[in-house]
Image (tube, rainbow, N blue to C red; front, side, top):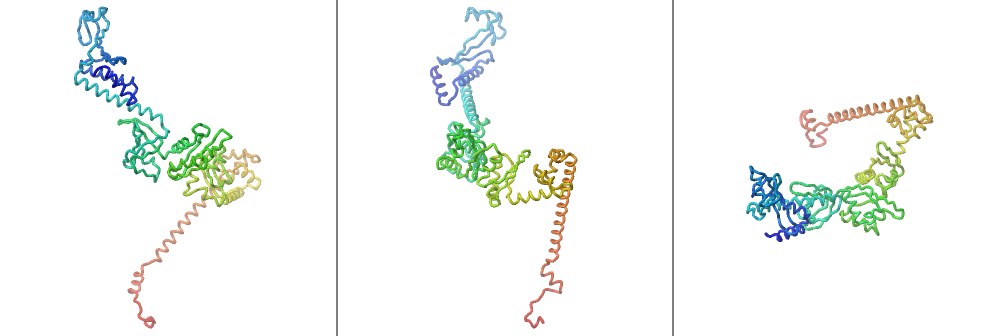
Length: 464
């Protein structure tokens, strides 16, 4: 192989494999260095360089110039050195050029193997570096095969894995060669090369689909705030914008629903609710529970929980089928949501207010003060320290201690009564179960007790 041919091969490999030229040249130099070690038994006292302009490989073996040679592998006499370089002096190192083409068949094969392996390593690293920076992007792949429910897709330069757990339920892929879109969720380097993991169930897949369909999102005018999905069934996505002239929900829906329908078709009919984001949590959760109407939202910021009150006839609509609507709304908002109908809420308010009036030393005035301060029942009182009650105007510290102690006794007595009632109910059930067992006896046992089985009478007279 002449120098120009080697240079041409390097150019072709870089072009076909997309490898960095400098990486391949370093690989080639290391391969020649490995072959030189085998051929000449060298250690580290030599170097290999590749001339990119001429395509020539130079191998120099360095030896120390000495007066008397004791190690021919690393030393050269002054006399021999001056034959090669008249200016040589003792203590200097002299580079002796070796014939790079004279490595022999074994050395050449070793160089070839090193080049091939390094090319594979360089290509593997290049693919990994490319895809690790693309996590969160949507890619198009061609189905190559299906292995135990896992789908292997070809992305062009590499294969990717769509695990069974990341596939939309009830979505089937039967045909090899079909195109499929998925989200890159991970890229890792394993012994066999880069492994790219895809998903069609990840919430970010829905967000990326909207970004591809809605120019306002890709341009940053409309922003996706949160996504909640139950893949293949239903999803909720909240959007907002800082531009008062743009309707973020309308931008995502598109003319006659064209944009959202494109996303729905890609997800094989998954229903999508697009919700306007609001920093006001009450308005946000009211939108998230649509289409149900919300009458009132009671917040507990410490526990990050919301009590949402809806009309009686819309309770099932707010909860959704098998709790799906409220579950998705809770994920979207990031708060725990408890939905109640109006009747139950009003009844609980009344019962809670009555529990305040039942406390010794609490009249209507004090009950109103507690209720208006957010303590709707005796249970609410014992959830805080007594000192906190004294911060209510009209209730001093001594009164606060008295109210708290009374509320504690009241709640403890209720718990005791509930426990006793549960015991009584269990005993009653056990009693009636045992009684029923005693009363139900087999027919043959009854006959045997009376002297034998009962015989049917032939006529009414015989009975008489």
